[in-house]
Length: 166
Length: 110
Image (cartoon, rainbow over all chains, first blue to last red; front, side, top):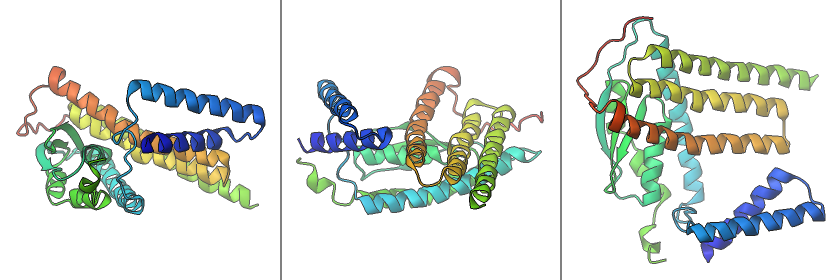
């Protein structure tokens, strides 16, 4: 029920920000759309913790995104440098990194964060949270091994286990 | 006056985004195998896309369209890693099953 409410609020906000019209007819269309989407989502059984993770702490998540953005820019410049070097200095490496201790959503965020930074790509992710990562250079693989990504995500999710009986 | 200034600043940022997209495309051509090429492709949909959106944001200013631009950026950032993951899994299974870390063949120059 809590998730349905949050989904409805999100959909209303999305409709209002995309439409920008506040005439009764348009608002009525909005209500019909939101109710339809809610109904379909329920039929598909996707209104749950996975689709709408409420256990993430918003300000921590924002901090995480800022950190990830910074990492992304640095990684982009590095890959651009490699691509533009005449000698193409790549040393493809496969490494395994652990995302244990995170929720399902946390593990997916972990894998996606690695994929989002150019130069590293999550090829596989097990249910236990072990990610197989392909990196463009050995340096990236080493950096990944000492990365604070898992701790940062754990901070975003702090206390999620306590809420699991939801 | 200031809107002309913002147009130039936004234009410059958009152009730099286009340059990064070009670098990504170049990497796609130069790099040797499917995994390495995906690294180059992700330059396009991270920094390339972000700079394009940022440039348009500067030109657009504070408006409803700016909000839509931000949403585009967020949706792209949420969906491209999933697509990349699906692609790399398919590559692992079908195209290049030998994920050999020792294979470090230097690519021939273009």
